[in-house]
Length: 229
Image 1 (tube, one colour):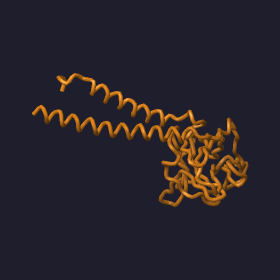
Image 2: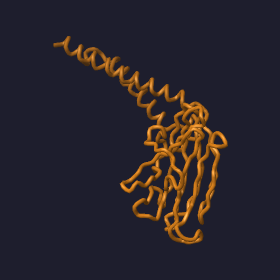
Image 3: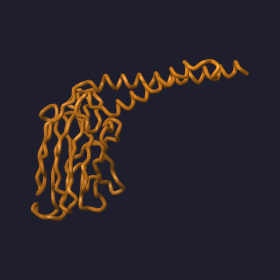
C-alpha cells in the first residue's frame, strides 16, 4: 500500500512538473516576442463629427487605419450619425470583428490586454467596412456611448502585423467619436489591446506568475517530509 501511494504521488508530481514546464516555456516564448518593437502613436485625441474622415499611417505609406463619421442626412444633422473604422495593408488587412444575422460587419470592443491575434479577424472591406456605432437598430455596433479598443491586422508584404486603436464614441444619435491613440507591432510580434511597449504586457505577467507559482508549489510539496505522505 505504501509503495502504491508513493507511486501515485510520483505520477502526480511528474505530471505537475510537465504542466508547469510547459507553462514556463510558453511564458518565456511570449516574453521573447513581446520584447520586440511596438510603435505607439502617443496621445492623438482627434474628434470626428459632421462627416469627417482621416487616415493614420502604419508601417508604409499604403498601410493605414481610417476613421470616418458619416450621416444619412446632412452632415451637420444631429441625427442618424454613424462611426466607422477601416484598415488597409499593401498585401491585405483584417479587423477583429463579427457579422450579425443581417450581414452587418462590426468591430469588436476589446478589453485591455486581449491578444489581437487570438481574436476572430475578418477581411477589411471597402467602405463603410466595420461599424462602431450606427443608428440602424439591425447593426448598432458595440461602441455606443463607450470607450474601447479595436483590434486589426495588416500586411505590408513582409508578414502579418497586429495593432489596436482606442476610440471613445458618444451616446447621442449622431455618435460623434474620438480616436484617443493607437499602436502596432512588427512582423512576428504579439500585442495586446492597449499595449504600448514590450514591457507593458499584463497577460504575459499573469501567465508567468501562474507558471512560477506552480513551480514553487511543486518544490514545497517535494520538500515535505516523507512521513507527511
